[in-house]
Image: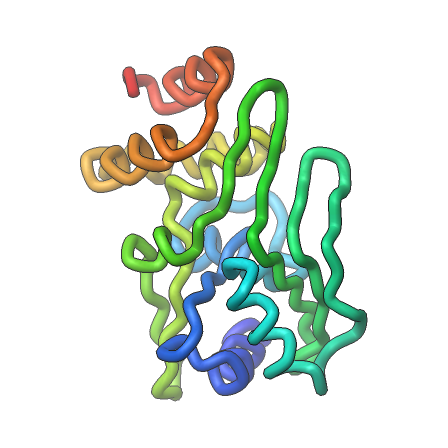
Length: 190
């Protein structure tokens, strides 16, 4: 079902025209990160302006109106869709602010660093969030069930992941405690 929904998304939201990323548990699954539960929805990230265009392109699949959502530690331009029997959440300009740290999902910056998932039986490829992004995001969410296996996967080839991780840290605001937690889970200085 995931491939069918992603293929439909690739047709509606042309990845060549719009920069967006598949994130969350679907991204982790496609990158070989061990999950305790299968994905229950499809998370898509885009920058604010792109998210507006994507919403207009997929209005036929929309289940709600696009709105600025400020829920607890999260802020994003949020909208939801039902595509090929899959629930899809689009987050535009996603930010998380927690315990002295602020992380902004800059999709235009992340796309060149993204993994590529070639959809079976299709001409479409989907960009998937780098593990460095997923690690930072899940540390701020206090999701040890996610960040521990992500760190384990990153440590298989940390030299590939460390440069982007350091850039994401320098581009955002990080508390001493969060940096220390990242260093502990990766077992190395950043």
